[in-house]
Structure formats: C-alpha cells, structure tokens
Length: 526
Image 1 (cartoon, helix red, strand yellow):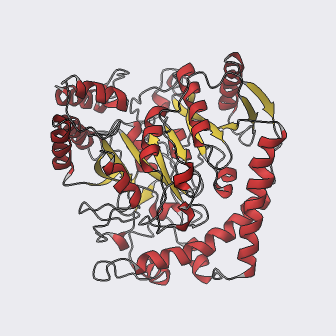
Image 2 (cartoon, rainbow, N blue to C red):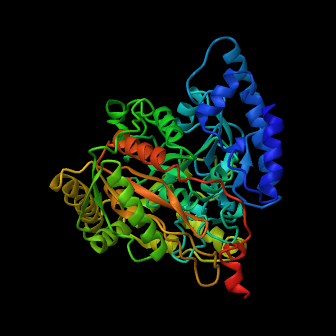
Image 3 (cartoon, helix red, strand yellow):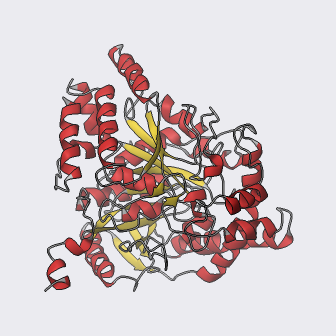
C-alpha cells in the first residue's frame, strides 16, 4: 500500500504538482505509525524511495542529489521487518531509510568519494562509527548523497553543490538555484522526499546552509558530540557530522542515535557524559520565557528575508520569548584565524585519511598526489581550479607557531569572548539569526547564496540549528538557533517549539525557475 502511494507521489512531483500531504514527506513518527498499523513496512518504504529516486534524481527534475545506492538496502529493510515481527523494535529509526553524505564511510560496498574521481574506487568496507550507531538504532542506509567536491574545500571560486563524481546538485524549490553546500545532495534529496532523513557534515556552513535554503531542519552539533572517524576530513578543530531532516523531532531522533564517544576520535572524550535523549527533551512550550539574542549578521542582504524575520520576531514575542539585541563579535579577526587553521589542518588530515585507504584502489596517497591528479584529469578542473589545495600543500605543519596562535585566538574570539560572552551578558538561552534565499547557479561569475551566519558557531565548535522560517518568492529561508557547547537539547527544543508554532515548511514543487511564478512572470514578460 505504501509503495503504491509513494509511487503516485513520484508522478506528482515529476510533474511539478503541489502535494502537501504527499506521504514521501512524512515524519519518522508518521512512518512508524503506518508500519505499526500494518499499512507499510520497511521494505515497502525503502522500495518506494528507491522508485522516487529513479524518477526524480537522474530523470524528471534531474536533481543529481545521489551518487550511489546501497545494494543491500532492501535486504537490510527485510531483516529489520523480520526483527519487528519478532517483537524487537530498536527505536524511532527502526526500518527507516537514511542517506549519507558521500564523505562518510559505510560498509555496504559503496565507495566513499568526497565527490572526487580520485576516490571513485575507495570502497573501504568500513562503517564510520556514526553509521554503525545509526544502523544499530535500526536505520536503513539507502545510499550516498552528492556534495560539493572535497566538502567545498578545493577552490575559492567553486560552484557549490558540484562534484566531478555527481555533477551539479539542483534545488527542488528552483532547479536553476543553488542547493548550497557542501552537503548539497543531502539537502536536496531530503527536501525532495527521497529518504526519511540524511546525514551531512560541516566545517563551516556545510549542514546549516543547504538545510536552510532547501527548507530543512539542519543541526551542526558541538564538535566532539559525534565521531569523525572514517569521515573524509577538512579540520580537526571544526569538522562534525549532523542530521538533516524535514522535522525537528526527526533530527532529535537521529542525533540521539549518532552521538557518543569514540576511542579513535579524541575530540569525543566528553560525548557520552553530555549526550541525552534529544527526542524526549522536546517541549512545544519552550519558547515561553525564553531569552533570545538577535544576531543581525545577515541583516541587509535580502530585504524580503529581513521583513520575514521582523514578522517572525513578533511571533516569537507573542509566544512568550524575550528578544534582546546583541553586539556582533569581531568576525574579520575570527575569519582570518579560521583560514590559517583550515589550510594547516586540511593537509595533515587529508594525508592521514589517504594513508588509511587501500593503495590498490586509491592511487593518490597524499595531497600533493591529489593536486597532480586534478591537473591531468580534465573533468576535475572543468569549472574551477584547486588554489586551496595548492595553498594548503605549501602551508605550514601542525607545529607552526602562527597556526597554534590562530587556533587559540579563534577559539577565544568565537567561544569565550563570542557566543559564551553574549549568552552570559544578557542571560540568554540562545542566539538567533536568519538566512536569505539562495541565488541562481552561475558557473562563470559565481553564485550568491545567502545562507545563515555559520562562522561564529563553526569556529567556536558550538551547536547551530536551522529551522524553516518561511519563503521569499517560493525560496526557503531559515531561522538559526545557536548556543554554547553541549546545548543541543535546549536549541532543539526551542527549534521544535518554533516549528510547531509556525508550521512554516512547505513541500517543493520543482519549478524550473522562480521566474515562472504567477507573481513574477507577468513582470518579466508584460
């Protein structure tokens, strides 16, 4: 039954029809209720999503959001159905299909490529600990999502959402618009209803930007809450994985499964003592009496998004929240320090990762090898170069005094003197900010994407949640909640209360362009 319903939804989506009750977009709790009622199964849901991917990803709207599918997905779903029939239910993820960004390893026969042709044969047969935690919680790994190649850390002129392995990811709210990155494929796929949830990774903005401008919930956790082992790295100081979903409760359920200490990742030593059941902690009344600091980093970028936030601020106050204007920290100094940190840590991290791969399958063993490979592979440099790679290769090592100073300065400016100081000064529960609508993809002059202000939380290593706030000319914008280290439970609850109050999210209609909208087209061609 579920398969048939979702297959109908494929036809609707491929034709661009609006279907707000389309079952492909259901929450995890709704899926579980249907399975419990005998109206669906893990197999039928997995089959339906595979059919929908076939209709929308490489055909139909051609989202290019997925690089590879798990060949064992249906077998895994069948085994989980058998467990359920035997009376064993692992939790809220049991039997539900999840997509992984293709820089996260999984032991299912798929390669982990980071979008690069250099890693197209990188089949490691290793589960990243975060993946093992998800499958232990009952998730079905559906496949690997496309991404900005090397998590958007190859060129300062990159086309966000493009990789040589998967092509350009398209935004289901406007197919000519950027899906941001680097978790572009995860963002597009979950927004388009191609899985129950997805995992992205972020160094600075790579979860929160594609989540915000694809109309999703996206959480970048505290660095160290989720293991980074067997995840292709950029920065040991800032890298983390996190959930990307259509509903806050689904993100909370996924984080509960993903979080935890990993002996192979020293950053996670405190994770077990801080993790909680984030789903159980959600409270629809948590905005009442909450104190929220307005961080106007994005003000002035989009007049329409600013106006939408002004209305949102009134709604937050009506719900009982107190809003406080806060001072913007020294962002240029933070950004300068971050640049040196990332350049230095990338070389060390990627060299260590490549050394851990199978030399028979991955011939590029160092960053220098990658640079040489790209220079001879025409598809890799077809749209932009690799100046970040080159700068990182020429940069200092991890013992460099300038790097060590930048690392200490960045943490202090963004953390203790940044988010922590702002929270303490006005006794705040969280900081809030907003994104703007995404721009048209322009491989010649570059794409403007008005994502959320990610840098402060990213450099501090603190949590950042984005939740759908509304739409500008049909394009999603998000509201961000940021807090101090280990405050995921609080900001998820605030985001949940906001979501339940506004119910702002709408399913995409896959338009070729916003210029075809009835409120815009008459002005284009009067």
